[in-house]
Image (tube, rainbow, N blue to C red; front, side, top):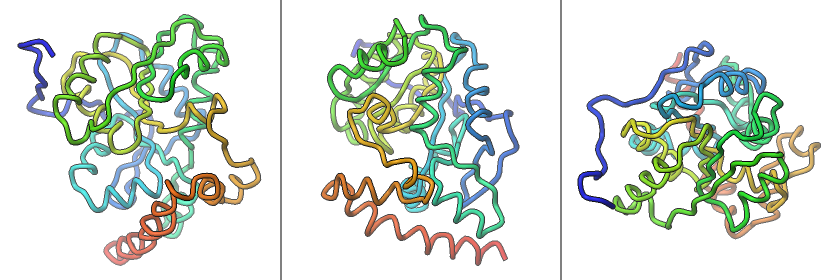
Length: 265
């Protein structure tokens, strides 16, 4: 990293509060009540050269982490758009009288990159993912200017690695920056970009969404998604990686919702 370009933060967060929809609070996090079409229209309305802003798509696992860690919660609260990724979270919100339309990040990124209003020469930057992901996305979506960078491990714990990745993204202006390095690393990276105020475009924190899109990772059949059982399919496919998330950490959401309802009375 060059001298004089060390990571810097502004006095106030350089994020852009959403005016696209009424925001509603659930588990102390403000959500934008946008369905898939509303989210797509909002994203596509942002000019490519506008200052960087980012979208987060919290699911049950993210919400448990948010309620435990104030610093992680800040990354989500300072997002430009916060859209519910989870059908299970939507059902839990309903028990509290809150309407949170579910818009899975995988569906959102697939619809965005194949949308007729997105021109073939739109610049797309993928951060993370496996070898050849950019080429697969370009071929599948009919895009001609897709780039990819693969940041090092340890973005959350190594400030130098985070700073170097931020600069690498700033050096590649894009209309959409697809951040696929897992939570909360991708939200940390997006927030650092927004606070620096150098990058342009919209950051999309969507985890494995592109891997589902190109078929590198199997997604649950539609019937299981409709029945809110996508988590069970993923657990069956990757029990070692996802066992703790779905069987130990995830169920804590029920206690969090119960506590939230008690406070709201």
